[in-house]
Length: 94
Image (tube, rainbow, N blue to C red):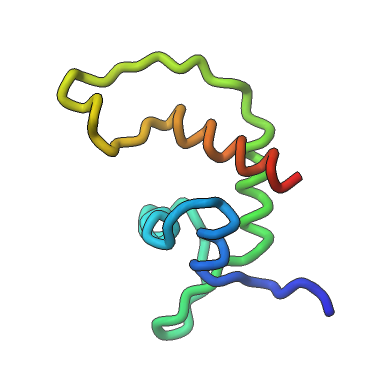
């Protein structure tokens, strides 16, 4: 049997080693295209592969910390951290 056209939020969260809430935030921010049928949310596999491919092709980023003393222990994530995480996920999947 072939691959389905779309995946659930929970499946993508497991694949990317993050929480379903993170996937939903990406959807809400417009970073992930989705199909909505009522309350059902599905993410096209083609979009997932495109994001993973783009993350794997990015150049390594020089990690310069621009956070203040107050942010050091917070849970904020910089774009550099996000890019590094996406690249690690893409390497693991290839």
